[in-house]
Length: 508
Image 1 (cartoon, rainbow, N blue to C red):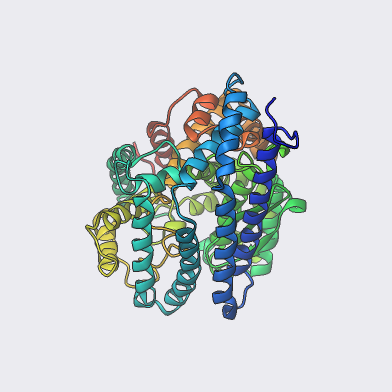
Image 2: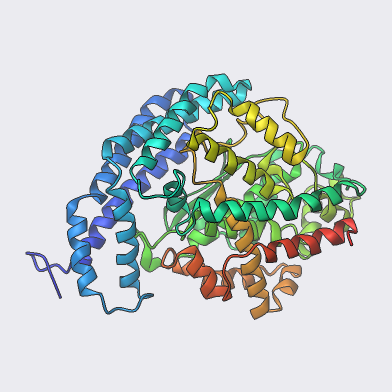
């Protein structure tokens, strides 16, 4: 077994270096979590600098030539190990990440990191003021940096491919564009057919629901799902997210609207779905590149599975609705389970992606995906983005935002990151969620019955065994194939939509 001068095995050397990098990334994650939850506005400038410093240090450690030397030795040493062994998987994933990371100069990474933090603060002000011009120059810089980042991967067929590969390894623009076109061609007629039907009354969701009691019920629901509060917590933020500092500290956030019950409820369940994935990863992968979700799309499949397939099902509310009525007796005491179920599944042409129903959601994602491709390709300028946004909503959904807040400023992604490579994950997750759930009930037909009884652990444990515990050992495509025996397909999702909403709206 190859060793160093002090006789330490190469694998142990690599693991020690990876732990140090994980510690730096964990510290940066804590600072970032605080930045978007409790940090006072006056700390923004210093926090941007602190995050940039930590990320630059982590990047420098990971791109150290010694990592490359260790990988070369380990690839030779473990060349005969099975593909799915922990050692072979670690070496494979680190090699993939390392080869990408060494392309990006540390100085560029630090600049981009600091810019992201300042751009986020400008976005928060612009959103509050409903004025895109406040953040426009920052977003122009983001586009410039996003293009520069893509230039480090000149072999890519499309300028967005490297960003997409970073989030959803194995997918490219050439594959995703036809997928979105297929979805759009299938979904638009369904939306139009539903639009011809009588509108579902969802007024029961639009009453006064005190924040404290909303959070109390959300706490109960996600605990029932299996979210471990001894290894996590929930806080409020402007745009909900999940973050992980270690396998023992996986946190979620939500936002509460006292005039709309669904916002905190479903964002909490959504983020808890992400957190269940991270909390379910094998402890052997702690502080290792294997100890994270396999891809953004696969991660999203878990949050959407819990939020939509489970928590918007009749079966879920057969158990939980009495409890919800107990918390909000004056608001929901006279509302039947069926009326509530129909209300939370109402389909409507809306402006806000995060509020969108299952039928229209992917149309929102397609709009963003197409706009960011146009920006990266130079076919659209940042200055013209708000108008392009309005025009696409008019074309695809027949509605137009009358404010920047409900238009181009509604999503944080471009303002807290890069342009390109993130929105496709939501649609990939929607598609995979249906395929995973169908496989789960094929293997254990009692899962829907257990959900009706309030037993969510049968499903949770199935997901943990088949997906969560493996962390990032397998790509999303590999995981989907291993678990379901199928490749990614639009058809199961469309069939699910037609069956569920055909029943709700009486479609033939």
